[in-house]
Image 1 (cartoon, rainbow, N blue to C red):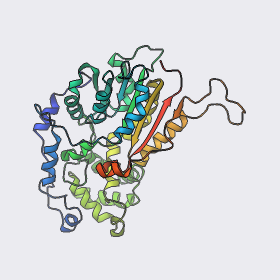
Image 2: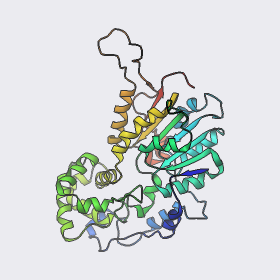
Image 3: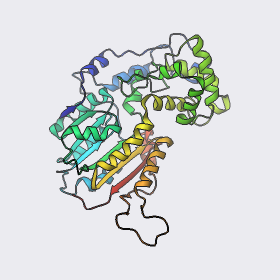
Image 4: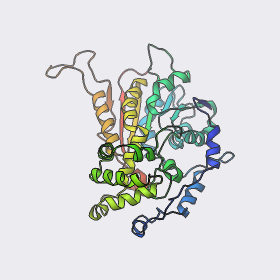
Length: 388
């Protein structure tokens, strides 16, 4: 297995030094009653999450990670990966969101001739996936980058065959959003169920944290962020209370934010629509990691990288991501012939065909096994043309 543009020296040290930051002041009883896991002391949940995570040097333990819609992803991508050979020889799969490597492991196992390029911005994820996929040897190449760095990543891998013919990848997989591994690592600050630093960076070397956003963005910018990235209808009220609170004491932990949200969101609204903190946490995570801008650039780059006959599968978990994928897929499958003409003009045919009718969802059986699959929306395309 090869590694590109990354070093794992800091990953093991980070794991050994893992500390769960707790609230510097006790939460109110009302907040603790509504959010029983947001406490000022490390909980059993925190310890359990740390124990499950693994990733320390010398450990082969893997996170509790159930890949979403795994069988369906294999079913959709297999025809493109096995066109030359039933074992996947000669084919390349790009896993643009490697995470813990669950999807990649299945593909490499099922198609013993397949080569895989895995991308992730999180060095700890790359370290854990590298451990998991090490048995596949030089069939695997891992690159530390955001998924909008697809073109650059492919170019430096050595697989980018000819400058005048960039498409060479037979399959591409995106599993968007925050990974189960990141959610379960309490100290990363992605989850509102436990107390942790307000971090939320998928790349721990990135400069911007959730605390920076909360403590430095002006009230109007915060309201716009919560409204646009979190679709939060109480955005203005929340932003106003954040501005007042930080004037006397800056935000440092997730529990402090959770308590403020309990106070800012009216009681009737807290009782419906899921956890009242989920929209604010989603908005902060998207802002910190530039997720939507990255996705807007990544999808066209992925479509360009596919060889004719190649296939792409994208799984999104919230409407903002899915809307971007839906719109870009619709453009890719649309004819370029001017409207009103009775025939398709040569060279104006759609470049892609849809493999799914709209977005596919997880079935009841999968949701029961893996509750995090409940919100998934899967879309897939195939590139038109004679496969090479």
